[in-house]
Length: 498
Image 1 (cartoon, rainbow, N blue to C red):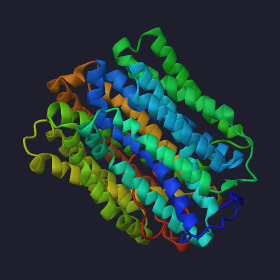
Image 2 (image 1 turned 30 degrees about the horizontal axis):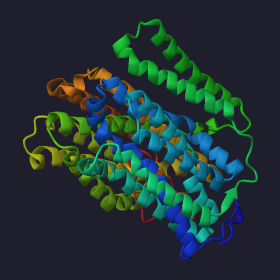
Image 3 (image 1 turned 60 degrees about the vertical axis):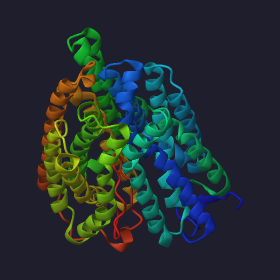
Image 4 (image 1 turned 45 degrees about the vertical axis):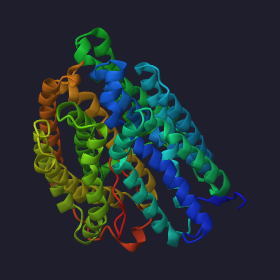
């Protein structure tokens, strides 16, 4: 097939065609490798910490470094693709991500690892929005919903199986394999994209808002650095205080600049909708709790409950099965009754699961103590995720569905980023305490109690701010308004958007 440029207003590919399926394979693999890296690394953190002989702050940076550049540049990546060609930016992001993965796998020390993780985040920010945008622009309108549904479902599976895959790779080889395994996937994506994926761009795309991208990235970087290093250095230290001020100032300036830009990265007018603002506030709180739990739980299982990396990955597999079985049904239910009930109940169920996790450390029985907590936690996720994303999209005008989805995705990532930066030290997990089972166990219990409180507050916020519309979320005309969510993606509902 000769590569052709398709107008952003209407694609020509059919879902049933060979070329169409190859396009889906390329975008699924490209997106999957980035979502996988968001969850797979958590299983390896205790081993990485012991090998490099580093403290908790460095392990926080291994996770936060990736989320930082990804969340700071995600909106910019989407804008670059719209303006300069989605296929071109997608390919560039895939190559960048592959090189960064090699650097992570070969890292000789923790500083190199952290820097390489930041580079991985940049690559992910370039290719993640492009993967969905390519499908939206390349397929016929009647096939677009099916194509996006397949993409989001496989992306959700990739995210959910991350802990198990990480444990397996460490069992058969080394923690370095969790990064090196990306390389053959990247090569496959490059070959398929170069051969089959058409170029698309938005002829009406405005100028790139580089100022906004710099401000939000600098603000988040300074804020996270101050929050992560503050507990060991002291928040009263002039350098830490200065970083926190710069971080807060950068975020405030970002809001000011975006409110005055003709073509902002983040149209703040979307947040004038109570429904949109409320759904994003719920997203921030719930994904902050989720980020901390997924960051610390593998450590607790390995360091305190004495699970191997593979066993700790297997212990979390029930979440994958629950999401696969129930998420589409949850989305279909929300399309009939509206999202408010599920968005109110789901976080409360997640909070109960987090409270049950306090038994993990002292557990002598997986089936008695660990499995029930994981099942309840997964059930809460399945109840909440699909209605949450659908509520965000339904609250935005149709022409702004793409940027609304990207904004919600970014809100979720920032919530997870800040929680990983703050909650471990707030719970007393600092320095080398993660290597001492008693200290880690005490800190983990405190952290999951805080996370449970955050989740429960998300349910309360949803009850206060979310309203069911007369127009149901699953209308056929909205089927193309699907989106991928971040931390733990849900498969698409059988009716309506995610």
